[in-house]
Image (cartoon, rainbow, N blue to C red; front, side):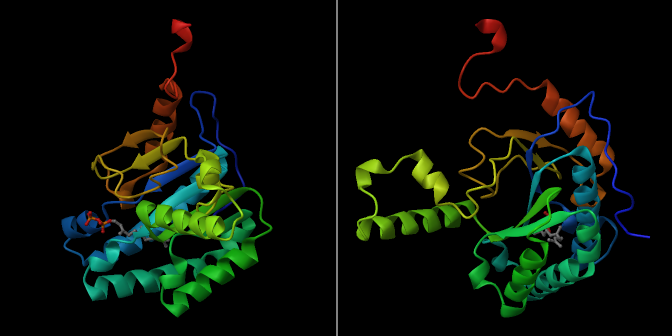
Length: 251
Ligand code: FPP
């Protein structure tokens, strides 16, 4: 019996499902502290819950799910916690690939992957390679990711192309910048969910979140459930996305 169970589709009549969703998986440490457990136990519970989120997003029909797993700032955590997290990432993609395959989920990574330990780079490469023809949903894992680092990467690539005479500085547009980000084919997230009550972006998808709706909940990431996701999609369905323009009623 597969861990992801049967391929299902959920009722979406009273909510709106974003094509592209971002989730900042925050609160593992607090979840562990509340239970007098080590922080690594919180991350482990967080990884188990990621599996749930993936299944639920898939069944709701989300096409691109980007999750914030490790930021460029997270290296400042104690060495032991960083090591445990790196091991957990390796374990997760090896252990759950059969279930991801059964659900037809493609795995991709965004971030400064080249600076990760070799074992992690290897797992990222393998997970991307073996899943590249899967079609139902893309799970995009932000690993060693920073929005500013991504912009630095894009600017450097554009600078190189200018130097080589491939583009003129005056021709650089928003589209040029968007086309030089890590994963230019992934649509900007319409919705970003952040559990654990913090009201900040923490360097997640800075460029891509220009018009994203935010949904914040007090629930700690390992406890974030199907009901919370459903509530987020219901609330999102009631938002009036104007992109700097006017409401339909005001026209
Ligand atoms: C932030 O919570 C969480 C992280 C830095 C790690 C996120 C990683 C996972 C959920 C593990 C699973 C991921 C994969 C890809 C297998 P925190 O530790 O800052 O929590 P706190 O703010 O309560 O201390």
